[in-house]
Length: 203
Image 1 (cartoon, one colour):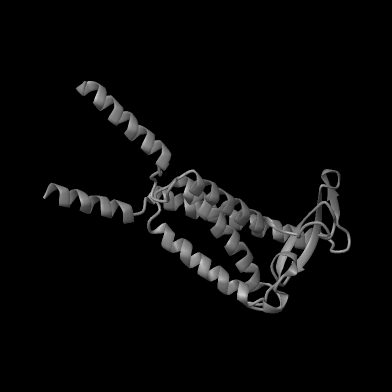
Image 2 (image 1 turned 30 degrees about the vertical axis):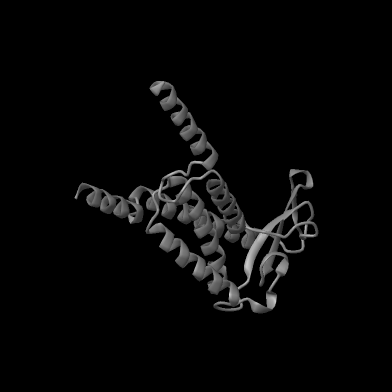
């Protein structure tokens, strides 16, 4: 009875989310979305597409660009596809949140969600129309018009940082339920050590 009850409790814990982690996810996404839209508003109001602003000695240029596609204007003829992909990502993150207990994972997923929603907002509400809207980009690295790297925005930065953080968490064995995987080599070494100690004690 106890064993069965213990298994049941463990199963419930594995599927139950932690309110704190979900709150961090939501707050991170809202901050990312708000900052992205604020910077886009400032850019459209103050930047001239024909006059990029050079800062940091030319490391960064602020160049107003409206992009109908993805990075490097890829997929410009299929603008409607990107909102659909974003909605799938949002749905996946919502499903993940139902099992989320890790704050670091909450930050990573929140950044991805905020970045996705930032660009989705442009797709839905900016010209030329719903699901066809052009994303506002304004950050160009090393050259004024994206000659050396794609022009991007805050939403893109949040997406990139969030994905990189998620990869780091996976590589270090940190799980979304708050647990942490132990490497096979470490477990094997500890098992061998335990077996050796037991042999010595018996001797």
